[in-house]
Amino acid sequence: MAVGSPKLEVPENVFVSKLDELASWCRKNSLWPMPFATACCGIELMATGASKHDLARFGAEVFRFSPRQCDLMIVAGRVVMKMLPVLQRIWQQMHEPKWCISMGACASTGGVFDTYAVVQGIDRFIPVDMYVPGCPPRPEQLIQAIIDLQDKIQREGTITGREFDTAGRQARKRALVEITAPLSIDASRNPVLQRELAIAAEPSVRS
Amino acid sequence: MPSTPPAVDDVVASLAERFGDISPSVYRGQARVVIPVEAAFEAFERLKSLGFDLLVDVSCVDYLDYKGAKHRYGLVYLLANTATNQRLTIRVFVDDPEPTVPSVVPLWEGANWLEREVWDLFGIRFAGHPDLRRLVMPEEFTAHPLRKDYPLQGRGERHNFPVITRDHS
Image (cartoon, rainbow over the protein chains, first blue to last red):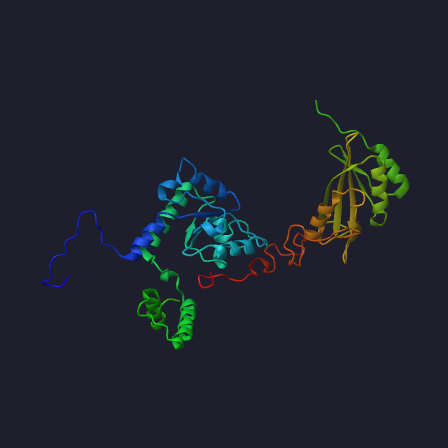
């Protein structure tokens, strides 16, 4: 605060924050997992959601079997080559912002199943935010991964999802600006468009 | 008191009478015979008429580099007679190229998927099968992975997929 400026009085029960942090705080405490359970890790996943370990304490107990309603994919178990196109399709059907946890040795590396049919780690084909070691991991380990993911969301999350922006996406946005600029769309009253234009004008830093 | 399965000596004798040398043997009380592939369908027809109404399983063994083996593939048919509780194992040997055996789907409807599985994993053709498609591997798969000359880790099929990054999703 500048020297000499009057001290700002904040009334009781009023907090000052950034919109990005508010959005991240809401998102991290209301994760809706999509259980992609194909093997024994799925049993531990169910145990994590059940009463003893009680994933509800971390706001992630609402498992939905429809990707449209989920924002956290938990891949629990080995993924075979016949299943991988299904996994990719479900991932693409999920709305953003979305995250992915690779649970257990098989999902992360193929585990002991180094055979012609088993994909050696799902991160070869879809983005993964958090890996859980173990064969299968105990529920505590999965809970730790969810807590770590919550930290990551709070740390990096933005209300417009800029953290997911890649160079390729920024290029597409620039292309959009190039198309819309000749139409002389007035951005002065549209803060979202202003922000997008500002991002598009910056040289890309993320890759 | 352990129960021994009923003898199938009469059935084996009747097969030997018709097909000559069928190398009968007994393993843990269960009779096994070898039928030449040319006579296989006739033998199965005869066995069904003798009361073997259940085809328990169709399986296959790849004898590549196996000590003393005379043939590449050995098909194994497990038959059962649900009225008398008799059981009989039939083995049929075939060789490359184009290993082919007659399909037994006309005799036992349940052979349909069993033969599709053997075709999928070993590449044995079943002549006369109504729908010889792959059963467990993806349709676009080209190899027969349980053959001994197929590498355990495959030929790269498991990683032949598009990569989805944050950019695409």
